[in-house]
Image 1 (tube, rainbow, N blue to C red):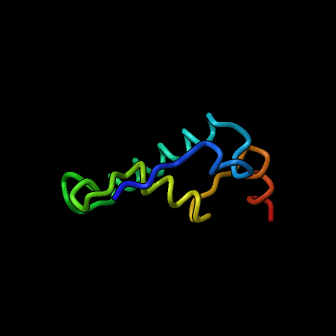
Image 2: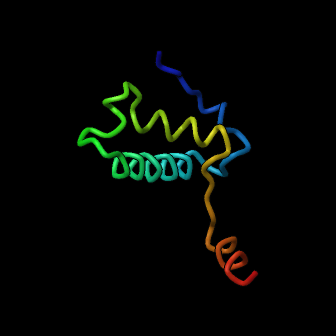
Image 3: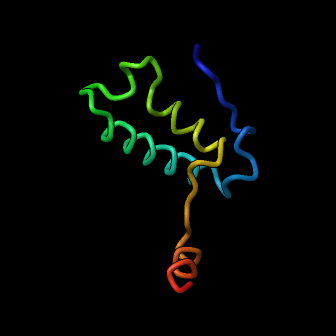
Length: 75
């Protein structure tokens, strides 16, 4: 069963739609590369992009901006 997502689902999590696309894309690439099978998550029936978006909604994936990253490094 495919879960459909709406832009409204991600309101308050990102400052722009562009950042959502970049974060989801990078996470989907990580999922694909980390799978032991050649076709990645597609073999389980769930596409890596859908897994990435669900992880973002579940607050399992986040991001740092340049300023946030610098502050986290200094702590």
